[in-house]
Length: 143
Image (cartoon, rainbow, N blue to C red; front, top):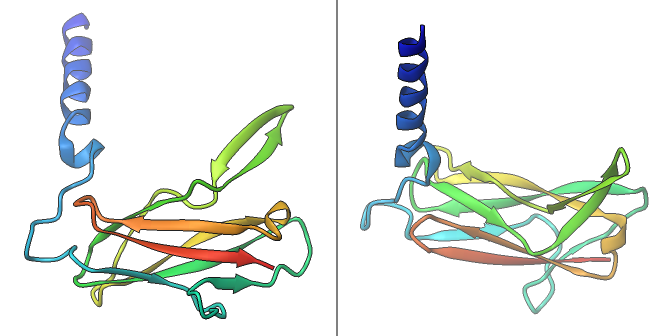
């Protein structure tokens, strides 16, 4: 029984340490992952910022869309902007956008981002990037 437990633990450690499970798989140079454009269907001003009209309530979501130069490109999402909720008296702070999404067969995709009522009057900064360092920026002014 102990031998089986040791083998299971060693197997889990070996599987969990493979780059393609834990880390991002690099995009081969010259094939895809060299072009990334992120955008919104919100109105855009002359400086390139998008404007979201917050119409009340506590919070809502909106979409960021992206276009890549190939299918199944993984886009990682990041923002310095955060929101905090309290669960059972403990604060939980999370970024407004996170994780990653894959482009479809046409190189397109989308991800949602969170908008809290306290963001009215602020600019939310959203970054999308590939594992090879290619990135794109989008700013959303919350009106």
